[in-house]
Picture 1 (cartoon, one colour):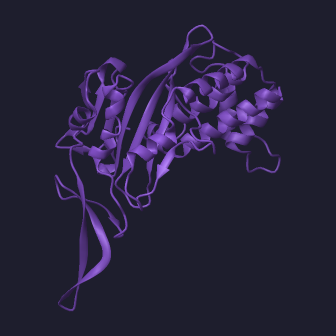
Picture 2 (cartoon, one colour):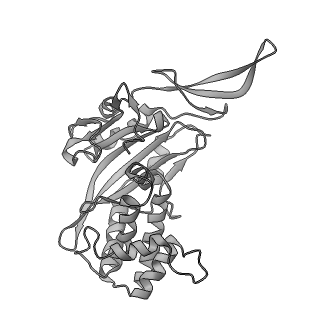
Length: 318
């Protein structure tokens, strides 16, 4: 995300927990494990507010209100987006305060935070101190990710993500009964942290559910035909009339046995699923910045959720 990271006075607007390792781009402020959410916000350069300001046009010598408002950042008067009067901003302090109870109780540790797209997308992620180890050492860790967009048309997004340590793949899992990958809140209403906590059902339940799914996938083997059917469902088929696999699906066939961590459960649906997560996180997209952003905030997060659901369905039928 280096090129997407906001740079202010030559400094990347990002903080990261040093004990988790230096980000691949080596940018941002390293912090200790004992940071409060507010301290993390300040370290990442995110201790600013946004304000809605009426906008005007000058027509024939008269100033007239446009009916829209500019969302202006307090520190530098930068206009981040244009919104309507009914659009409610969520201040960065509100977003980080969401983590305070969990951090104070020792349930979470702040992990990363930063600003993307010139301040239009602020994120914070916390290690939920929960995870599991599979198949003799395949470690998976859980994080809670809060994205706070200061941009019209974008919703507040709070979700759990899992990271497979051996390959740093981000594994998206469903959170709600409807199978949605996140809790999304429109800016048409004011941010209600307690409502979000209730919707998320903050607990270890989701991590345990993902562990059960992973164990199932690692216990069932795919066939060449079933793997190709899986890839066609996830990546689509070629536009050619012969309905061959798409180029991306063909690449998944190539990496399934060579991807990092392939040695833990070769030939199983766990490897099949992770061929998708590996490609989306490490190969697809124009560059590493776009891949990383899409893995957390973009369409690849949804693609990985779809891949998990399809893999589980096919493993259960095997």
